[in-house]
Length: 87
Image 1 (cartoon, rainbow, N blue to C red):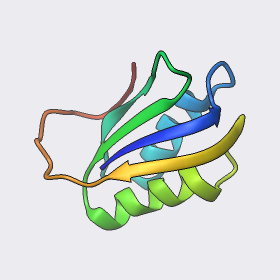
Image 2: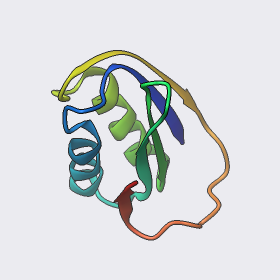
Image 3: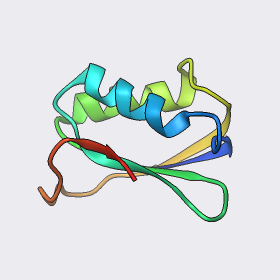
């Protein structure tokens, strides 16, 4: 799953909280990255139900900053990631 989060999500610890939540959910590999246009990109691979929990948290959870919207795209896992990183 790849998600793009828009709003006031840079400079507020959003990436670190996202990583911590992905680790709390467990079973997810991937990364979270600030984009040049102010959005944050989240890439997560793992069981679909766990990816959906992360996506739900991105949309409705107690995130730092202010989330104005989340767009997601589902695809086949590539198996390229080990752990969940902040980039």
